[in-house]
Image (tube, rainbow, N blue to C red; front, top):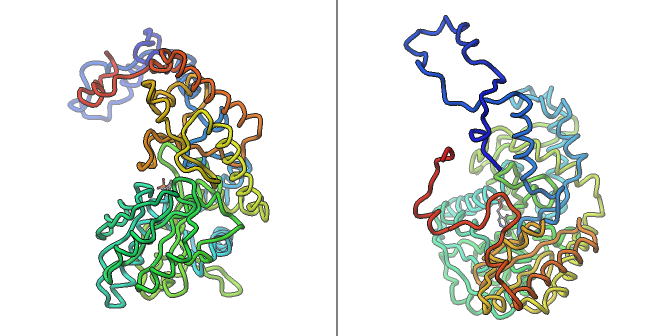
Length: 473
Ligand SMILES: *Cc1c(COP(=O)(O)O)cnc(C)c1O
């Protein structure tokens, strides 16, 4: 596909020199002497160019999107309709409370729904993403110990964790202590005990973890940590696996964030928008960022008066449009949220069983909503997880997450989500098996994939060392 500069043919949609005559009010010294070197095309051709570009985007509406850890599930379109209702979309965040009762009511009820889903005592809707929720949670934990007068500077994080976990704790000034996973892909309790000292503030855990495995010893871990005077932080980005079955409160956690844009069906990717509400147990309630939305029996209020609040972490009320979508999704699903998790787990296990013959399954046990394969067997024929990912693109399928989690060689992390039917899962399995067979017979095509995409195999080393950012050639 050509760039718009290459397509330029001298035709004009808007004649800039016509406009120039109307620019008398601008001092001559600010006017350019030569015409800008802009592409020249008719309005219709410009339109076609951008439509063609947008058709290159891959999205859940176009095909299977098993990007592990990202929960690329179907986002019901009715959510969009509700978020764009004039009363929500055009409401000014500085409007009086009396004029914002509907929006405040929605936030209040969403807080309550999330309290019920997570089991936490109080929820703030402020944070704008998962990582932002983590940072908020870490700030709460830090301030909690400061107010208590305890000097705790360390945070324990499993080696399977999402990269944002150590980044968030570190950004908050904590020293990170990685804890190893055992042969079952779970936190190694003995290794954990060895790390415990009285300056450990918390452990950050994801459950099910990023291998898609449920941490069976989570209650024991919670007991050990609490006995040490430490807190437990729950990265709830994998909530899609457990909705209605269990919650972080029952597992003994004190602080939780959830990704509304993953589990609660807001379109995401490409950098946002998202929302990462944070829930806490009673003793941490006063530390939440403000405002919290309250109800006095008659009216809804934004409460800025929390004794030990860490302050504001985002302007106004957070990403309000995302909150509307999440609330709509929760209301629409009701008790069926549990069914969504059930189907997500079923779909993942179904695919895992279909693929385990051709691909190495490093943690051989039932998985939750996602599972991690390794391309180690294919690597013996010179084909890497990256090659397989590119080959999937030739087959109109979005690749899984690759090379994460870091503790699995040639990792391919697959999350089908509940929104796919058996036919799609079978189709994906067939493509993956076809690729594995090709690797064995003749990997030539796979090694040079992708062939059907606008950008073919790129020389990544040269691209990194000598980037050519000149789009005009
Ligand atoms: C996606 C994800 C995050 C980060 O969430 P963002 O909204 O992308 O900041 C953190 N932890 C896990 C396990 C995730 O999957």
